Amino acid sequence: MNIRTLRQGLSENRDAFIAGAVLALFLFPIYWFYITGLKGQAELDAYPPTLWPHEPTANFLRVLRAVPVASYLSNSLLIALGTSLLTMTIGVGASWSLVRFRSRWVDMLMLVIIILQMLPAALMATPLYVIFSNLGLLDTRLSVVLAASAKTIPFVIVLLRPSFIKIPKDLVEAASMDRCTGWRLLYYVAFPLVRNAALVTFVLVFMQSYGEFIFSRSFLQSSDKLPATVGLVVQFFGTFTKDISGAMAFGAIYLTPILAIFVVVQRHLISIYQKTDTQTRAGLTKAF
Image (cartoon, rainbow, N blue to C red; front, top):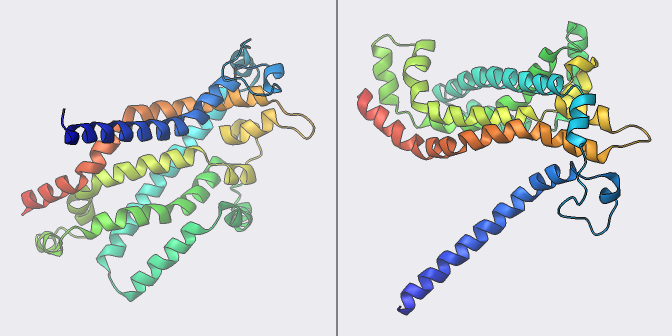
């Protein structure tokens, strides 16, 4: 074995060690969610904390029996799906429009969009509460979907606009000469070339909307309309009481669907993201 081969092996082992350490750092909070959900009160108060419950409890069964978990999860999924669909519908059209009409005013508008993205949701909640109150939309899931969409649309525009910019003007002009204009130009020509980036963005928006809390807490009062994020606070944290083990068990149940979705699609998302540019170039070549 020569020195070059030895150095290469050490470099590979170092990279594997660093990757494993980073992976453990990200997975440990998830592990702690599930493990803490199995602990009793005595082990929760123990110091140092135990990495594995010595006397596992039935907290998960207790939570499933005492808390309307299905209602909370279904509300979270409805809000996330509604927000994702509305955000992508408006965001795709807005991104395409900002590419089609290029000027210094558009650049200024993009700056405003980026600034809006930095605004905290709590700052937007108060004026939106007044608007929805006047419109009679308080205590409806629609109000949460509209508010979350308003907060997320700038994020979609920032992500999708670069993909639309890559589409050559010659292709757009050729399609326009063939009387493919307006929404047909977007639907039949532009969107197929950026659909991979749009799919990745959709998943990101869905995962972000699944954890929505501020607007739901501000606009919803009926217990049967609350998402899981608000249900966690309502069910396990009172003014003078708190149920940590139950909250962690509920959090683990709430986290499981999104983890399952991520595990299923993460390889496809990485592959799609890596192939976006290649497929875009291939689509352009085929179009011409």
